[in-house]
Length: 121
Image 1 (tube, rainbow, N blue to C red):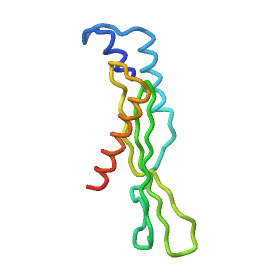
Image 2 (image 1 turned 90 degrees about the vertical axis):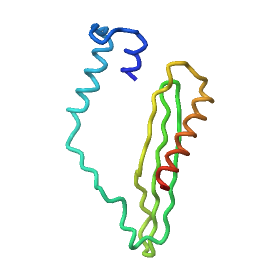
Image 3 (image 1 turned 45 degrees about the vertical axis):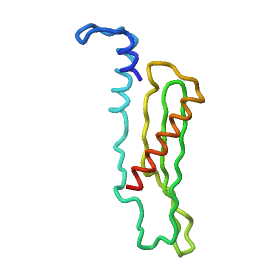
């Protein structure tokens, strides 16, 4: 979104950016380095013991961005509770030409459908 704000200014490649946007980019960069060592397991679930699985896709939008996320819910034949894990997500910055929130929500729904199609393939 910060890059989109820079684009809206219409500056040339070698022009200096305003201090406010420079500070915003610096804050994003610093937040990456401040994160602890995060480990995300590569396996989603042990499907050999799965008796049921459901894919749930949630979408949302604001005036700034649209997003869709997919979660996988799996259950097994044992008496263990169901497991839910984040499966995949997709986010897009709102277009430069402003749209209404209902239109943005519809665009988020399209992203959700495309995410589902990608997962199904």
